[in-house]
Image (cartoon, rainbow over all chains, first blue to last red; front, side, top):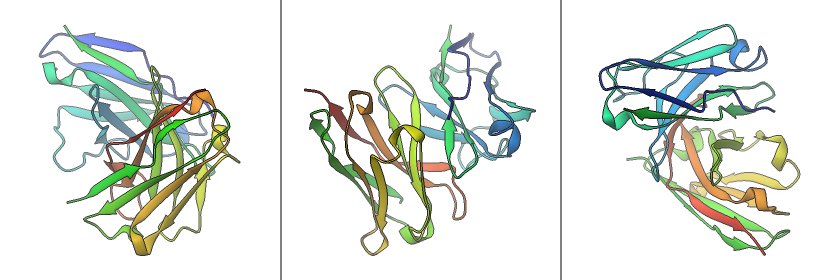
Length: 110
Length: 120
């Protein structure tokens, strides 16, 4: 079981859009439409942003959007805000009933 | 309101054991997949184990197989993680999480976590 590959950090200015990638294999990200994304502010509990690759849980801003192509999933944050500064993790089913998180991406708002 | 409250963490020597608990309320516990996730210092989130609604199926990350056991008591609306043969790299904040919907495994609700520190 390997960690899904995410960039260690991504930055952008307020109002810009940024995209975080999550690369796995055909045994996890590429094999199933089960990718979700989580936001975690320092000292806080993770928050589900996107599930089922593209779906929003109730109450989550549409500024966050998900997509997938092949073995790579992506999270796009549009209209970047100061409060978006946090760690972001992708999460995928990985066969045999197990799941994997990505290594995490620190988003900095310049 | 969905509430998940973890307990049972603490300081333990290498090779030691703990039983982590997660008390659930505000929903029909017996209808949901439940999961343990940990956050290690300076590292990211790691999926540890999950269990199906009736407790008949459970899955583990390779690094804890044979050492950790997930279980649940639906009558008590409680989730457990028995952690044995602890190692320094098991030091982490352990969260319990509930699926977003029944029949789903996305981690929609999280507790605040219980801290396990493995050190001599």
